[in-house]
Image (cartoon, rainbow, N blue to C red; front, top):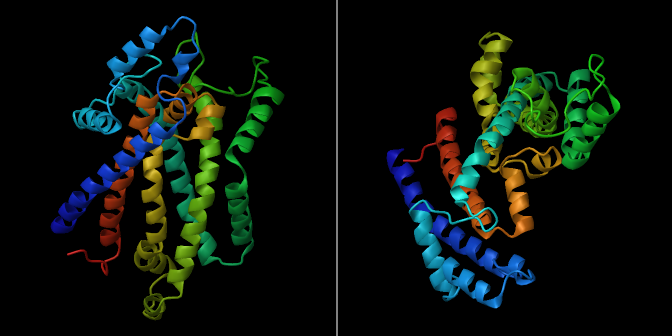
Length: 324
């Protein structure tokens, strides 16, 4: 296993290098370039533009720009935001905890609900519970995130009123009420709507994988053998079936975990949540190249890393898998 991990880490180096080239080329292909926002500004003279090009290193060939940027990234410097004039790493570092707070709670909530629901649906296949959960899962996965978010805002923030204060029943955006003391009640109230959107989306996806994996396992020979030995149904399901049934879900989780750090673009934008998803969206609007490239490289690194972690978890859950 140690040799496998070391080999995968070595393979990740050229992969991340190719990704960095693709990210840099993609940013260069955007019309206008990093200084497009200044070109039509009457307060910016051509001399100012030339000075900015020199300060940002844009007056050298593209390949040299890439090498300069890559060298800075390897030193932990993602560049400076063209909008706020602050380090891009600082911008990302301020938004990342907010995203982990929202996405982490939604992810854990969906996972804790989807595993028992998927197991029961598979064990009681074609029962009313199975039909109801399968229908709800497909509906939840098919509903557009932005539409569901807007419906929740209209219902709980505009239509329904708090009987005690007469104001909205739940906040329609933000992490907390501006100008008031931070309280647990206020933080939970702001969390409910965006977390509900993410929980429904993740729950619908996880239930389908958990149910399909368990149905496949229940028809295996070793499950029938366990029943023939007289083991209780609960022992057969949890001790012999669960570890193999969860393997497809582990793959999905391994691909979704990097998204916890990247943020939910639509959800954070709709609910004005100051996280990574909203930062990425505003950076696109403002053509903030340094922040965009920093977010994309962070995403690529996390995807490669958690791909390796997923393979290791696979070997732990399924003794038939060996990497050495």
